[in-house]
Image 1 (tube, rainbow over the protein chains, first blue to last red):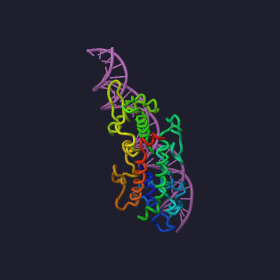
Image 2: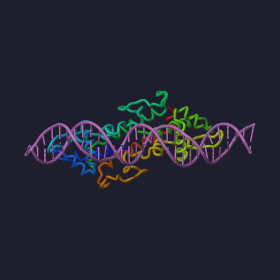
Image 3: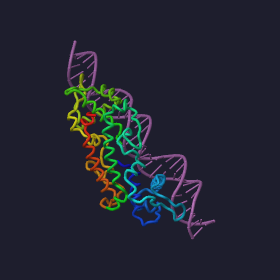
Image 4: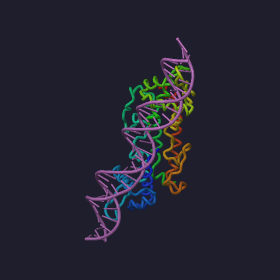
Length: 137
Length: 137
DNA sequence: CTTTAATTCTACTATTTTTATAGAATTAAT
DNA sequence: ATTAATTCTATAAAAATAGTAGAATTAAAG
């Protein structure tokens, strides 16, 4: 399941994607429109900025805007940025690989192989969903 | 990601699936073989029992055994039993549907539709992985 | 009918993660 | 200088996860 944070991030990106080109959105407006606690949203937008998905302008009349076009931002990207690995266990992850602490011998693990299959299919599906595809109905 | 509990459940089921027919396994043996804290495993086996995946025999020489054959137990089943919904948000779930508390109008939600697509694909993939398929390498 | 060895049940606890909130500092336009 | 925005850091409350403890129950076997 997605965390609230990831859901809010997606909603914020959807909001930004629906604005006119070159429009800069204030946190307050996004928060009100998408029903997200403003202070929480601030953190999320910072994370999105650090993830190079949005840009910001500081000071009066500042705010946030998309750095990439909607069809370059996939659900997989957002998931990885906020909720981490797509794989069901770290040992089956491409980007967040970690050995299972309780696993005696990874090469003998019956689980890992199947989980890597799931990962490939889920990843493919998640890469097929973009901010742009979500906006278009 | 799977919780430890779900991972342990899968490992326990894999252990049971590898035993001879009619063999009854003690919690202690499963715990040692799969490197699972015994007391935690007890709870997990009870959950599996309540989910009608394993049966048990009480008293001396008691223990646990599979109720279904390995190819009838899918990853989706285990996930739902321990980690709940397969969908990324409750509002996109088949078995664990719930309205998003922060969602103003579900029918207007841009997210939901895409998440239902993901759910369908993930579910299909997860139903393709069974305890039996995992045992066979 | 007592001993032994297993499951079953209920409650608790500690840790971690999630979900925020608070407030001061910085930045930029006018 | 004023105003209104982002940025940064710290904190806190709540929920979920992971694991522990111990007593009760059950059944086999002498």
